[in-house]
Length: 309
Image (tube, rainbow, N blue to C red):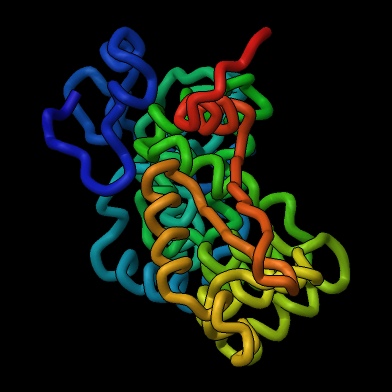
């Protein structure tokens, strides 16, 4: 097991599988105890837990050119799925882009590390390996995390610990899978970012939200502008305290002090806070976002509310 410190989202195999499993599982880097083998390229098959659903053809071609010149520099992590002599098959756990690029480059064999991994370990490896890459799009990240939650019965806290994210980041990403498919496509194609996706979740479901997303993408809206528009759709009879979306004749809505109060409350509670006022400007409501039941319970405790079972 290498002692090199992981950077970015990954926190190493120990954080991923736990201390005991980490001691038993193979590292991505070759060591004397790893099963390092050169395998026929056609003996490998894409992993069923691969979170990456789309690969940029131009970047794949660029990687293929590099492989033509230098070969596959990092072995592909695989696990055996058919050990029949003469017909062995291996599933790719990490390194599918290298495998596809090697095929484009015309290679017949590729270096691999053959590991013994359970389905859950293979899924975790695939998610972590891809999360560490900047070019993995938002929706592939979201579905990769959702797969760990649903297929293996892990909690958001479990997944967060294994992939090196905080729990709120896991919750925010997974919630994006509730968006309509056309909106998911905009996120997958990079026409909208994570912040845009989070803003759209506050708008009502349906064609109106899709229209809002398309408008934001085509006009290159900032996240803040989309938040204002989504909030207006959510509360048609109320406005937030944001001056840029409030009528100029309504000084209360444009009051910077209220915006500052939203910010302070948000920092104190650890969630998004919106203060909305009615037409009378003498009453309104405070809206708090929560993303899971655990998050809701935490908000109640912060506000001094004792939940009775």
